[in-house]
Length: 383
Image 1 (cartoon, one colour):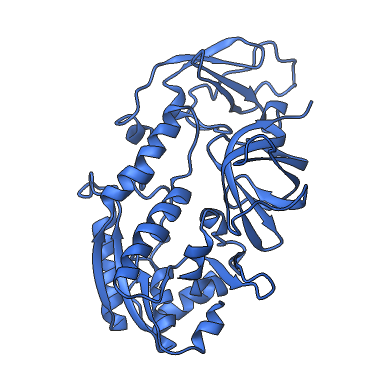
Image 2: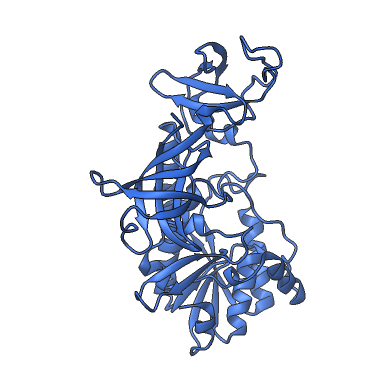
């Protein structure tokens, strides 16, 4: 069902996740304007240090409540922190401890916003839930299946983070602002006098906020220093613990001014260093110089722990598009399901992809339809 189709139906009870941001605020406004009964819910997902300078939960709730007051809707404060810690944060720590770089926003959507929140909304008698994500849902009349589509604003599309949603979840979900450009959302918020019309968009992982990432991880993950080696096998520095680094990382390596040993004169000896590999067995961090170093390029990747919107992977060795990180343009690739592992697949790219990172999501598209994806296990570079 599209947003337009919903607007022509009888009045429904719709529970909106009000985050305190402008996107969810305009979502609630648009649905109320269509004549639906709108109820707001503020989700509290983290409480370990919500009195800390880096945690904005209390401020966000004040903003969400102010929006509800302007719109004339009820708002309920619901604490999902225990669910979040068990379903999202514990997995986040396991992945970092294993040397991978997880994307907790993907897991939060699948486990909290569209599971725990959805279940709570259904207990409140909701017909649908709605959030401020930039994506769209459409029921395909030919197949009867719900499709997850990119938001119309290419700079704000969030389908990447929603690729693990199921048919049951999409059937109950609305994304009103997915039909709009962000500039239009801001304009509407300003026009109707929403108090958060000009509020800055949140960035980063919700429970880390703006705090130094290494400082936060250091509280939860054991770490052991080890060697940093270049592509010639030479030890050039020491790292502080492999969990604190991710493939493609350039900042925070502590070797910025170091020249490449044995570099030819004028041959890029001052080029920046990048993390290229992590060897957990030997506790070694491998770094290379130059953005285009072969170790940073992958023509193929393997992914596991798959989730498909339609309930099944694309049929055959289809040519599709894929993202290996958010905000990346779709990369043309061929898809092949793993015949030996039902929850795995391989992507072969027409052009090498940069810093394909284990733990991140490989999300597969057919045009503007998000088909699903999996968790990257490894990338394979040019021969």
